[in-house]
Amino acid sequence: MIAIGDIRAQCRLGDDITDEDAYLKVLLQAAIRHVEVRIQKTLVPLSDWDPAAEGAETSQPITDDLRLAVLFLIGHWYGNREAVVVGEAANTVPLTFDALIQSYLPTIIG
Image (cartoon, rainbow, N blue to C red; front, side, top):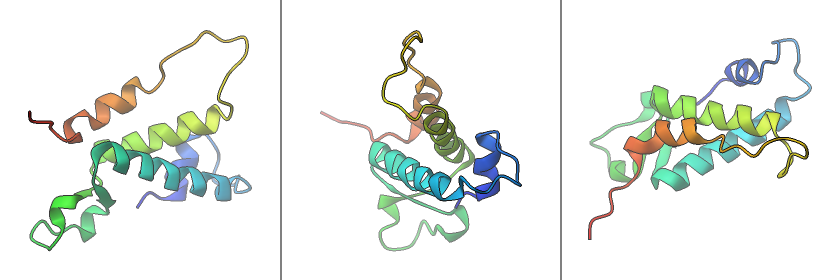
């Protein structure tokens, strides 16, 4: 769905730095699950998505903005491996992530 080379680039790792690949793959799966939970749909590759297929209403093709949201999360988690950073000002980093997925969030009626 997202190539390991793209993930390395997001984390500013060269293609020759492969010793973090297993960790990057774990981050990829976690980021995909995070997006799926937030939008309440299963992400599928755009090439595999069929809007007429049974169950299509519960799936979402991974568009460029969702792909970027996943990469943003991976980059953030890769660079911030601890829950608390001592000596740094507190920031709400996921603002870009929220903006990228906003239009995919389910509408609450009622």
